[in-house]
Amino acid sequence: MTPGGREREKMTDVSIAPCASYDRAEVKRALRQVLEPLGGLDWVREGMTVAVKANLVAALRPEKAATTHPAMLAALTELLRERGARVVIGDSPGGVFNIIYVNRVYAAAGLKEAEEAGAELNRDFTEKQSANPEGRVLKELTYTAWLDQADAIIDFCKLKAHGMMGMSGAAKNMFGVVPGTMKPEYHFRFPDHEDFADMIVDLDERFRPRLCLADAVIGMEGNGPTAGTPRMLGFVAAAESPHRLDQVCAGILGLEEDAVPTLRAAKRRGLIPPSAAQLTVSGDPAAFVARGFRHVAETRSLLFAGDGKNPFLRVFSAFAGKALRTKPKVAKAECVGCGVCRNTCPAKAVTIVRGKAVIDRSACIRCFCCQEFCPRGAMKVHRTLLARVAGRV
Ligand code: SF4
Ligand code: SF4
Image: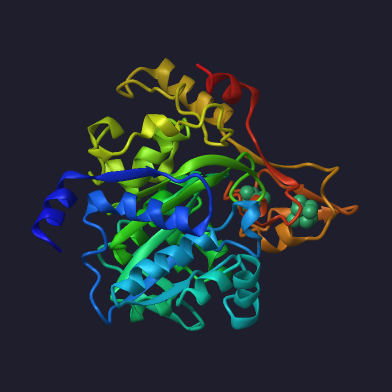
């Protein structure tokens, strides 16, 4: 890295740049622009293996806006290869982590384009177990071993609304290091949203991506992270810290920072400042604010227990917490009774009755796996009337 690059890197927490389309030349220009304030790719050395952890959540075409766009991955591959790096792109989608299923995901997500640009698509499907003594809640983990061959990891997320975590950005993207079939087990191990977010932050800390990038040219709003609506956002963002990147992106999406559990967890650990306003941002986030972005985050604005000593406020806060909670809800007209939600549910809270999914609310841990993997988008995130009203105050 050049001395100038090092200085710039210290000065910039998050960089943001316009990107008008997925035209390859435009994407490459935008990536160069967004990386420049962070010192470019000067840290990449000849012969280095760089693992690009994309978001390849399911076998969905790029137009669905659920996966990192192949033009982004191809352009990044070209930039890395110009510096002499070997590039391996991968992820563990929801479902079995094997060659047949993952090849289907690669094909649907259009990754041939990245392959043609010189990237290898990961075909190492081994899993590893490891102790994680530094973890706050995740003291041991099972992960996809392909990441071990990398000299550096780039976390390349897709910016989306997310049923459980409010938003899917750079921090949540690292949950893809967990093999697909084990993900429901992780949900079951960490049913509380705060613990689940702490687990995600433990993964971020354990794998420490060297660089985080967000594909926010076309993001997803509404019933994300797989069945929402594509939404033009028009930018790419970059940072060293996944949490700082998410903190700026949350503001662009109109999310209260405290409505995003991973941001709350990162704040508790001092990984991000109390407000995005305290970050040094290169570029103008205000120019990309997505007005009216439809998200499904839980509102926190009615949750106040004061210092915890006032019994009325404590009771009110507990009531408000329940009343504001989002829940999965089956849109009966759209449900075809395929049973994917039943098979995915870690709490065994779903049954199929007369060809439609039915949720046992007393067993549901609100992990939203059913909503994430419903192939028909029939499982919705339901916000109560109070939550919808509170979201506007
Ligand atoms: S996965 Fe979706 S379509 Fe299939 S049974 Fe569940 S709710 Fe219905
Ligand atoms: S019903 Fe859905 S949200 Fe509830 S525990 Fe099962 S998968 Fe999770």
